[in-house]
Length: 146
Image (cartoon, rainbow, N blue to C red; front, side, top):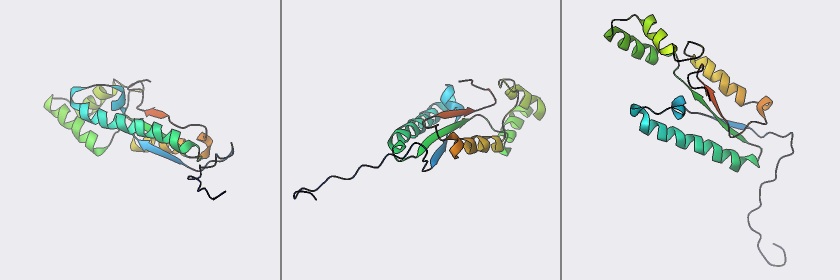
């Protein structure tokens, strides 16, 4: 108190330019980049997550905290393998033919692994990316160039 008046809450001190106080990386989805009938509600939810990441980047930036997100496309997981496999069988195709058909929409002609998505998160999280905040990094082997 000064002169008998209470002060409001103190504002966070802006960090020095070289200071980083951490980062948050949210996992989003490539559904942000397309509109398909079956994905409407999911796209709305993921769009809200993108808006949250961008808003938090603004709000936490003064504290030296960076907030970004990654938007992975289809990953070659057991669940996706089973899904593509069942579609392939129903169409009289092999798993490889089903995979090739899905991968044909990717510039790299393949689906990424979960580890490659993790690598993108690890790219954004540490200090070498200290000037990146509020960004959404597409990790989709070129499915939807953005």
